[in-house]
Structure formats: structure tokens, C-alpha cells
Length: 168
Image 1 (tube, rainbow, N blue to C red):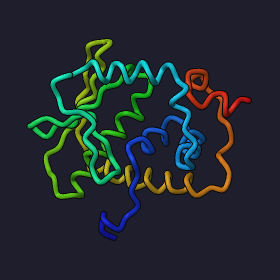
Image 2 (tube, rainbow, N blue to C red):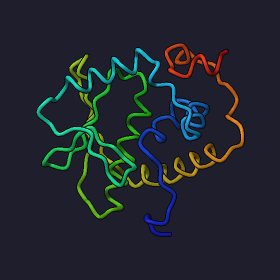
Image 3 (cartoon, rainbow, N blue to C red):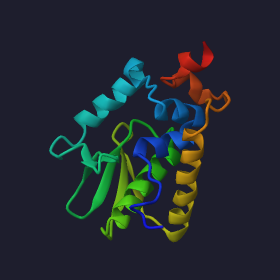
Image 4 (tube, helix red, strand yellow):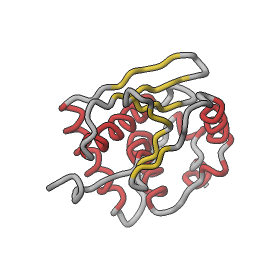
């Protein structure tokens, strides 16, 4: 099956797949809670205040939205903290994978953490590509469930914008 006909996901869906399957289910069913979150607002502020000279929010195929991409084909993603490091890493890997499947080669990624003045370079491997295929299938499995997955309590729940929906 060609990539054009294959299952696709958004960057947010990739991220939520790692953060919380229940959050992913709510999001894919049109239930969004981010507008109620102070933490999300802080993240947006950091995003807006960082790298002001760059053209930001580059939407591709109405599916993936890159923070910004530079002339060397480096996807740049800005995050408040490393708390969801694996989710962010796979989100960028997916962007690279997506662009590769559109015929754009040599793309890399960088995650910027302006608060701690650190960055992490991301490069895709064949193993990552295989894993992304599994992840996308997993996202579709969650999307097409009739009910949200069961609640999995964790430390991250208290900071989640969906907290009240899950615990009330």
C-alpha cells in the first residue's frame, strides 16, 4: 500500500498516543480540553516568544503542523519541558517520516527546550520507520473504539487538561 493510501495521523495524535490513550480517544472524537489549561497557555507563550524571526506553524496537507523548518531541512519543535520526551521524539520522527513519504529526503529534527536552554537532535532510522507504522495502526485502533480506553492513573494526570473529564 502506498503512503498516500495508507493510514495517516496528525502530530498531536502521535504525541497523545504516548502520553495517554484515553486523551487520544477524546481528542479524536472532537473532545478538546486544552483551551481550559493554564499549562497549555504557558507552552503556547514559550512557543510564541521563542525563535521570533522564524515563520512558524507550517501546516502540511492539513495534517501535520511544524513549529518551523530551516533552510537545512531541520524540523524545529519547541517544548516547555522534557516531561513528555518520548512523545515529542516520536512526533518529530513522524514529521520526518511523513515528509520522506512525500519525497523529501535528508530531513532531521531538533527539539528545543528554551527554559533549560537545551536541545536534542532527532534523526530517523529504519527501526523508527517500522515502529511508526505500528504506532499509526495503534492510533487507529484507539480511534475506532466505541468507548474511551480505561483510565490509567499516573502522576501526569494532575497536570493534564483532560483531568476533570477523567476524574469527575
